[in-house]
Image (cartoon, rainbow, N blue to C red; front, top):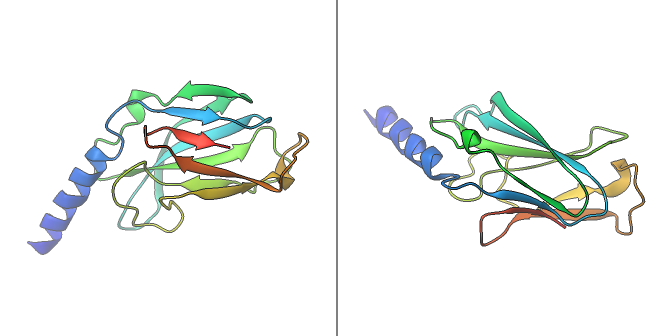
Length: 138
């Protein structure tokens, strides 16, 4: 019974994770790729990919509404430079709610610029959720 109640709570959290369409705002001088995945909060394993967004430098892309979690799975976001010379990416969890898995933290998180093919002024950029619910890379 406790297990069923826990699954129900996790499902409700999943439903509230990304309740509205949000944007990915890229304030950097380089393009990024954002892979939006669903992951199982019990095992922390990625269960499926919703989509991959290409976000040009200094631009904004809306997260598709079909990526809103409607099951016990939670959303994770994997951000990489595009193009990238290595696989060093950064991951962040949902904009609100529980963050049960270490690989998808609440943030902010750091994406190092050493994997970017464009010239970087700083050694890293910060990825965080804004108060408006947008994923901001700056």
